[in-house]
Image (cartoon, rainbow, N blue to C red; front, side):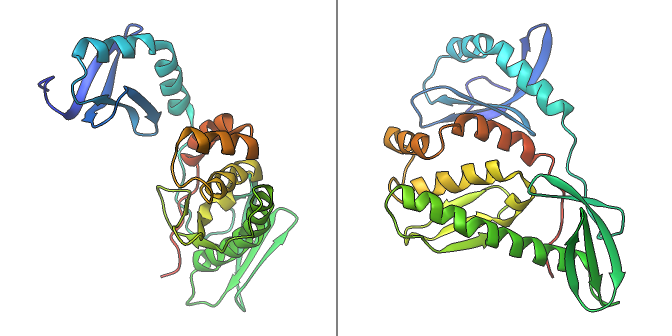
Length: 241
């Protein structure tokens, strides 16, 4: 790719390894790098000299290679079909599915999720419905907890089906949380909740916002990194048709 271009895929030698990365120029003041399940991405200011871009990557070489290795070792999320014997995490704990026919019902019994549905119904539909109910029951009191810490009344809490955004605080003060947070340990869901509650005061990502989040959830940096890694391992379920 022509290095004068604004975006594309490039290669660089880091630590004796050839690393592919996605490069883009943006209206921003600083260079930024991201490593996730899609690999390495680099964002640079529109007029940043190329030597600064490559110098920055070499400076961050050890961190980049470590993160790439971490992601490569992670198991990827599997597609669940709603069959007995499959496993699904609920608040970070694996549960085995036990599927049968009968009146629609889902019950958590000693680490097993007992699912019964009619012969023409999909077990996954019942499972997703149950998971959403568990999520809302768990998230509402946590939102109220963090809201109280900033002197606010508990805001409305809604669930979302978003796949790329864990949560959002809308302009009317409603907090929408991705129901798939129910798969993760409660501490990681708490990080997302505290993040969105902080937006009730600061609808931005300014220094004031991060300072407020630090008071609500002091370990937010570590939690954010763990959340990124955990997201790649979540099971893939399709919601009700």
